[in-house]
Image (cartoon, rainbow, N blue to C red; front, side):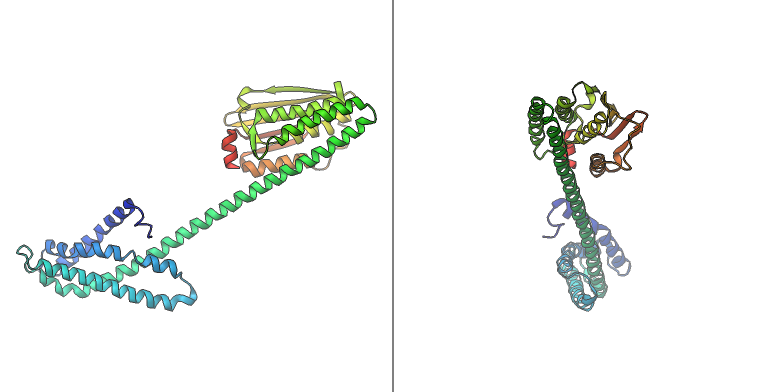
Length: 358
């Protein structure tokens, strides 16, 4: 069905758009004949109303026969014949209306308008061809919008696939490091190794419970980070100290699931583990308008050789923020004295809104 015919409101607006054309045709006919403008309007009004529907027919031709180099001649013949038929319909309907009204006393003499039949025919041909051009333009715009929607959907699917792939790479990386820690601890203290296995099982149960949730409240993400640090607390004991400063306004903000876990893992592996006396890991979350800022700081040995580039954990977090938020997110990481600091800034959204956008 034609899009205009599918909506009464569109149909009404379309018919109203013919009012200026009717006024122009009436004015030309009136000025070039001895008939009154009322007679010209009475003859052309019904003809324009009928021809308005005739001018919707090019939609079906345009949709079935797109413009192309090989179809030019075929289209010229098709639309040439259709326009001629349209011109005949317009001129015939105007003349038939004038002939019918000529029998009434009020419109006697309207038959004088027969001299305008060639003009009406030419206007019918012109208006039909104009309608065909407008239909081709409208179909091109609609196709462009549809292509843009498909491209946007493809970008969204690609982004979701990349986010899922990045997330799936985190779990094996973390599990490998944890099992390596348990293996090292088992040869020294079997009881603590068993406790670490129990805590690791609890952490994995919590993280796997996220299921397909792409985003979770920051409060749940912090709980997962604490669960991981409890696993490492078994191995490091008093050497690992955790300090938190979390503003309550931040806890409801949605974050990508397991965003902080690689950061606290790096803080332990590359920071606390390299210090004989250990040190603190500090977590802070602050709300700044529509943005939430999360900072993770850990003590480390400044004399240890710093890696030349970001490790896999930091690279994954930076990429997840970039894919998820684009230019609205910021990521910074680097040492300052004896402290290694990672700062994340991104829009504070509800977990449900975040999930629908991801």
